[in-house]
Image 1 (spheres, rainbow, N blue to C red):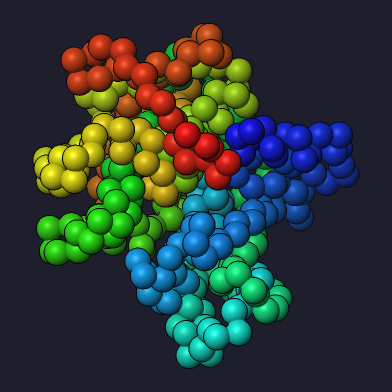
Image 2 (tube, one colour):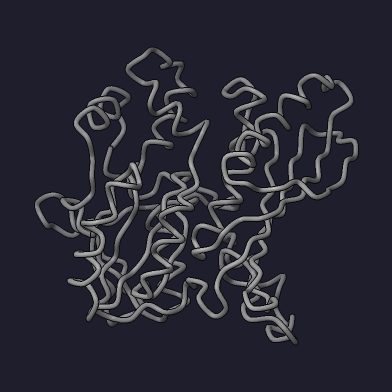
Amino acid sequence: MTEQELISLLTKGIPREAKGLRVGIGDDCAVINGDGFDWLVTTDALLEGVHFQFEYTGDVLLGRKALSANLSDIAAMGGEPLFYTVSIGVPQVFQVERLEALYKGMQEIADEFHVLLIGGDTCSSQSGLVISITAMGRVARGKACLRRGASPGDAVYVTGTLGESALGLKCLQRGYTDLRFGPYLDRHRNPAARLDAGQWLMSTEMVTSMIDISDGLLADLGHISESSNVGFEIHARSLRLAKEFVDCATELALDPLELALTGGEDYELAFTIAKDEISNFERLLHEKEQTFGHFVTCIGSMTQKPQDRLVFDLQERPISLKRTGYDHFYKP
């Protein structure tokens, strides 16, 4: 059973409509009516041994990543983050000084984006450190960018570069930690939520769907496809794969294209632009992109057939991959 199949099973029969609820289960955030705006609410859990290992990261970096991952969901809706809560399960041997460092990392990200810690819960854990964060934000009423609005012919874009976090994890697992691999270690241990880009994209009113790339590009585009009842095609020649990235991946006997397509934990944004607005969007993007500090790249388009999951290699030959991204319940 896949993660999505398990979610569908566990939420079967739960009402999808309620007073004040705009969007419930099935998107990056729940969307709830506010006073002149909409509230965004999202929750993510990080478990030691599943999402992180302390031999690969430090306490401050873990705190930063934990909050950034939640804020990335708000970025995917085009929202502004405001508050967060933290529930934490702490092993008895865990030192108080390390908890302080963990919270220091979260506070660094909170200060950067003007987000306030407003509560949470603490308990003991018998199986490693557990961190669960709920983040809350807001977006203009009715303007949240959802997964379900894409149409055939819409262009597919991504922010930043893909696969570098996955490469960083492989480097850590294999002990490749010299300076050449530093940028990829940083991408894995200290990701950035694309909040500025998300809010700007929402403001253009040209985005038909959006999601953050946490499980892998193909897996997360698959969520857009399922929600929008369309397919997609991606062209590898459009992906920004830097020579240094390709060289480092090759040195570790890894396929750089597969890392970019399925690696996960990029925390970039994948989004679609209405087919009739592509030229207007490109004009606006040309004026705005330099303020982001990262690329925004068109990599493909949405197709008519929902079953389409088409990927073309650098020679425009169709390819297939065994996995589309990370799945907690995947068994090879």
